Image (cartoon, rainbow, N blue to C red):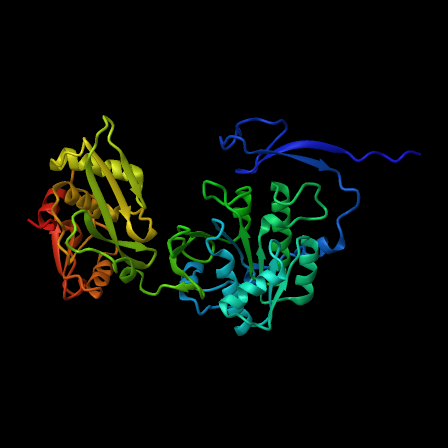
Amino acid sequence: MAKSATKTKVQYVCSECGSVQMKWLGKCPDCGEWNTLQEEVVRAPEKPRSALAASTGYGVQPVSLAHIPADGMPRLVLGNSELNRVLGGGIVPGAGVLVGGDPGIGKSTLLLQMAAEVAAKVGRVLYVSAEESDHQIGRRAQRLGINAEDLYVLPEIVVEQIVEQLEQMKPALVIVDSIQAIYSEMGSSAAGTVSQVRDCAALLLRACKRFNIPLFLVGHVTKEGAIAGPRVLEHMVDVVLQLEGERFHAYRLLRSVKNRFGSTNEVGIFEMSEGGMQEVRNPSELFLAERLPNASGSAIAVSMEGTRPLLVEIQALSSASPFSQPRRTGNGVDFNRLLLLTAVLTKRVGVNLSDQDIFVNVVGGMRIDEPAADLAIATAMASSFRNQPVWADLAIVGEVGLSGELRSVGQLPRRLHEAAKLGFGRALAPRSALKGKGDAALPTGIEVIGARTLREALEAALVK
């Protein structure tokens, strides 16, 4: 009797949204991206799933909610305060963390330093290197001054072998670098495809949650900066971290895109040095170190990154445009917000910027999205246009409305306390935000100037 042929079919999976199409299309009908459909050949499995894969599943018996302890296992608090801040207070046992970032930004360096710390404090750590050999990891560790006995490097790309080592060792932490480089022997497609990334991540997450082992996955990013692979990978994990920064810039920003155990508004700031990723404990002082106090087009904004107030320098340059369509360029600020503030300055204040090329930059590679920086951005643009510097000891905070009015912002006392601590003698804020604030709420040693409109704020901020 002839052996029956293996059933196969061809499907096309979008690398951006993970949707499955039965025929190839130039544009994905779900997410609207072009040239993202990848061909995958799906074969019926020739043998049942191994006992190894089945053993990583959860128990089938339900547990009463009243019998589940509320506190659970304590977090693993790291010595790196910036990483602790972004993680929400430390590493949660059994949590799945996805770390993304551009190539060469420092993901492997940061995770290797974290692995060495956990190995020294808690116990064995399994570092799965799917892209580099153990000798390459050893050279990086030597450069970073890391020599941990309990840090084990596993150069493996087969996920079944990784899970087997994980179950035998039961480490305190597992790091997989990277999830796009490993594959499952039960799959029919190549490593890095949508189905392989999804299946490998699911198998690793099930195994780690079964033994309450925290898992860190390194993910590649697309040319747009998003984590490569389907968005379902971000839904599968508990925490999604994004490491940002310019390749030729020393500072790195670690943001939390998703966090089931903490706030997503926190940001960690690091400096890439010869000794690895060093945490920056006072970023405001760092961002203001090279400031020219009497230069026009420079203003100090007081922004909030989660629970931390940050003072950053906003630089603006206004120049007569030789073109009929002036340019508007923003680095670190929202482009639509920049257009809004330009229109308000032109219409409500009389600062005619219709024939001016405008360039706005946030110093230090920071990105500010909150409206509380509106007043500082508008003040910097007006300062450059009028060629009048802003008072050197003035910190600025406030939201600008379409009518030119200033609106209050949250956590104003904390912002002003940070400005006073860094030596600023005056602060410009919306007058409505000062109503009801007693003297005890505002810091001492700093004069708070209230303004109702953008025109009043410019009169107080610019040096005559």
